Image: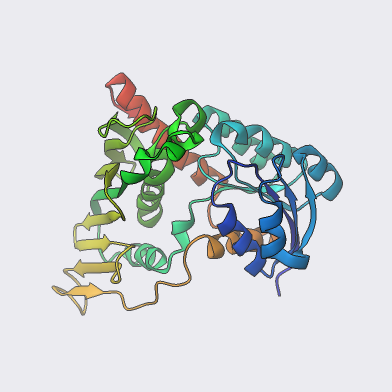
Length: 345
């Protein structure tokens, strides 16, 4: 039986996915109590409704919460520009940290937080929750078994709706402002697919060339479109298209090619995973995964993070991989700005 811990939810009026996090905290048995700090009191009523008696206290000051409550883990969901000092304060207080992405507007602001977490033997986990979706877990397992042989290449696209960008209410939020968000579609959505490509193949992106633009011409200062050519540390090459193009919904895929076959992920489809191999008992046949797509989303990822902090077990994403995802995104931005390939260390 896992231990249970006190979790701090540290946010403000601009916090993202707070409703999903409240649901996750309510459903996670390993979270014994929740304490909330929200200087704007935006989420006090929502927290009381979602958490009931599990909500132990509310604060308007993040510092006061940390001093009085001493939680084991802090879940920080804040505007990217405002997040680093709050993450730093939580680490200083001895808390493991689960941070909504991107958690910074420059990788240079996140790296010292990772180094601090590592020195203190604490987890610093970025909310890249797709990692635990069942089809992703299976895709990683398949590749680890060698069903594709030597890996040759990866292609990714993640396309969302342009419609949101036309709304004044969206244009006024921090997501639409580069100095407050760090970037646009790539750092908000594309980062998930970049992380997954590295996660399922067991590789890291070593260098990137790329372009970004605001092709839709909306009143935003971030990109609505990004493309990248990528080189991985095992020698394979890849491509990424990340953009707001549709009127509604999503188009997405991750495809991996290897010496012995291919694997195709479309997580938003009813049939999310197919693969082909030229070896073994099913050689020459396209195979489809028959597993359930659930559970998925924020709740299982938050639960896994809390269990890891309660039991000192492996987290769903390491501090190093959290930083790696951010460095990859900012490496693509750097390449787009300079017109030169960026080496990602």
